[in-house]
Length: 99
Image: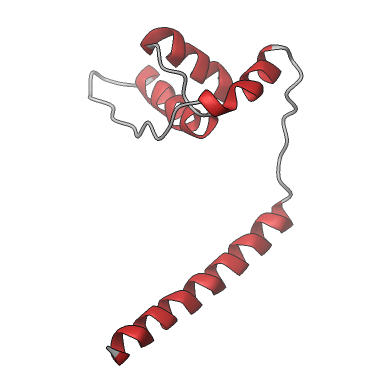
């Protein structure tokens, strides 16, 4: 089930339009529910999709392109962000020691 299909199903069922990021959690919850043995399923609904109406329109009209971010750029971004995070933690720790 595509992400936007899960979001549209949720919107029709619950009356809330989820953000595309939230739709990933909804899709996972739906997939889990299909395999569920009457257990409670909890997921984080992190945001509405009111600012994403153009994306929904693009999806429903067939104009939204499925884009996969290149793996090399993902690795590079993770490396940069982890280096930045380590620097920030060291800086915060140093500031705490000064206090």
